[in-house]
Structure formats: structure tokens, C-alpha cells
Length: 259
Ligand SMILES: NC(=O)c1ccc[n+]([C@@H]2O[C@H](COP(=O)([O-])OP(=O)(O)OC[C@H]3O[C@@H](n4cnc5c(N)ncnc54)[C@H](O)[C@@H]3O)[C@@H](O)[C@H]2O)c1
Image (cartoon, rainbow, N blue to C red; front, side, top):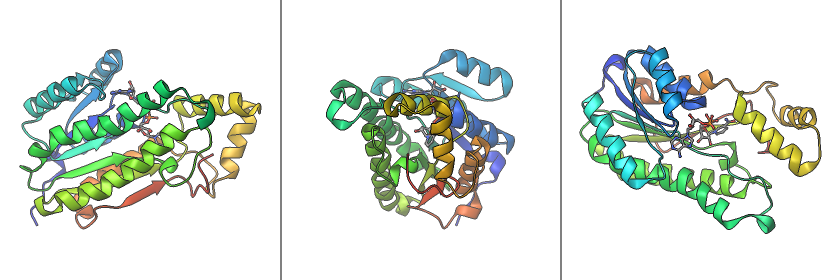
């Protein structure tokens, strides 16, 4: 099997200027890889480029098909090809029971989490096929393993991404492209706080009660560090992962449910 040294990998990360994506971008850059990130937030992208010299970026909403094609063209221009695609972009969506859900809010989550991932992947495939050892990493979630009351659009998209990962792995294996999904649990950071706020508003419990309930649900009593997810993504893209494809990797402190 043909391999690529870490420091020669060309990596594209969606939603890479904040949160988990930023940790992944920084971790790949630390290996010496060439990294291009896309993000909807131009200010966050500027801040990342200032903090991590050498990273290039494009402002892009993954739900906008025209913008995605332009972004992938820019990435290929900046990187000179593509070996690793990290489909990280995804929004939390509304907190409401299916019976009460705003249909437009449902569609907005599907547009970004599912269709956005499809659009970026489809545009990247021709370039990945030219790589001697390409990898796609898809960001699913704990919500892609369990039912998740009051978060149906999010759970539906994260389960859908598992089907997408397993299907892509079978379609692309013959081209030497591996495809795997990472399923983070509760990750430390501002987004988790927003999730707890949403749950507290829905259940009437306090923020502290929601945090304690989330930890009760895990064997390992701490929330996940984004750096640990980044390390898993780097491993999956490395030669050490060369026999791994079509798999799901929970990283969630052994969580027993999604809420
Ligand atoms: N944080 C968690 O607890 C957690 C748990 C499981 C899975 N995940 C998944 O991990 C991924 C990243 O989550 P996060 O918590 O780092 O997210 P986040 O909310 O912190 O956002 C990360 C980045 O996404 C960008 N972004 C948002 N919408 C975008 C769009 N339409 N196009 C391009 N960029 C966009 C934002 O500008 C931001 O810089 C998501 O797919 C999420 O579902 C997160």
C-alpha cells in the first residue's frame, strides 16, 4: 500500500475555525501537514490564520452548493491536491419535541449537517481519488447511536451520517480511500453550555442539574477535550489506520444515552 508522510498530507477541514474543527486543524498543522479550513465565520477564520501560520482558509457555508464548489477549488489551489477531508460542519438545531418542531428549523439542520456533508464530499472525491492514500473523516455524534428526545433533527442527521460513512467506504475502497466516523459525546466548550441551556429550558431543571445528569450518564466523569477528538482524527488519517474503514468511533467517556 502506498502511504504519505504526515508532513506531506494535504488536509481540508470544514467548520475548522472554531470548536472541535479548530482543534483538528491545529493538530494536523502540528504534524506538519498542509491545512485548509472552511468556515462560515470570517472573523474566526482570520483569528485562526493569525494564530497558526501557514493555515489557509475560505469563508463558506457548507449548505451553499455554489460556495462549496468555490471553496473546494480554493482548497485545491492552496494545497496542490487533497489527501484528507474532515467533514466536521454541523449545527445543534432546535430543542423541541417532534410534535412542536418548526419544520423550517428541521430543514435547516438537514441542509447543513447532511446535505452540506454530501456536497463537500462530492466536490472533493475527484481530488481524493488522485491521492495515493486518501481518508475521509465524518463527524457524527453520540446522537448517532441513541435516540435523543427533543433533538430529533440533530439525531436524525447524525444517524444519517453513519449510513453515509458506511456507504462511502464501500464505494471508495477500491480507490484506496478510507472513510470513518467519529462520534463525540459531550465536548467541553461553549456549545455544550448552549446545549445544557436548551435542555434546562425544556425540562425546567437548573443548568447545574443538567450538567450533573450528563456526567451521571458517563463512566468517565469528565467532558471530552476537543484535543482528544483531534488526536483520533489524526490517527485515523495516519498509516496506523490504513486497515480501518467504514467504522464508527465513539469518544464519549462511555456515555449510556444521548441525554
Ligand atoms: N460540541 C459537542 O459537544 C459535540 C458533540 C458531538 C458531536 N459534535 C459535532 O462536532 C462538530 C463540530 O462541533 P462544535 O461543537 O465544534 O461546533 P461549534 O458550534 O463550536 O462550531 C464550530 C464552527 O462551525 C462553524 N460553522 C457553523 N455553521 C457552519 C456552516 N454552515 N458552514 C461552515 N461552517 C459553519 C462555526 O462558525 C464555528 O467556527 C459538529 O458536527 C457537531 O455536531 C459536537
